[in-house]
Image 1 (spheres, rainbow, N blue to C red):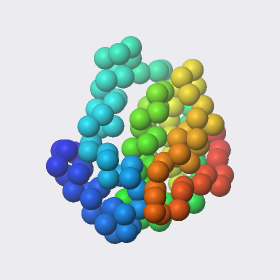
Image 2 (spheres, rainbow, N blue to C red):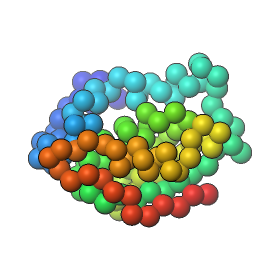
Image 3 (cartoon, rainbow, N blue to C red):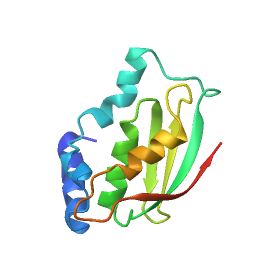
Length: 129
């Protein structure tokens, strides 16, 4: 996805969510979109046996802009291999290297997103496998 398209999607989502998140407004598609390649260059991806998956249910993720802000926040956490969000179910699915991060760190990252004036994200359930 080009940076211009990503910025347009984020801007549209932020407007639709009534300025829901500073995180989505400041995410310009720079490092988040290139992190998998950067990880590969910096020491490689973890093997599939090392990767864990977590599903987080996120209260307050009510529009596509919110979902994109949550996804980009998770992608910036060291050790995250991939992150996907689903606004319909209010969930984020994260693949991560347990040697570099854990579910508590992922939850803290999501709950730390500055969404002023919108209410903060709150993780209401989580599962790990």
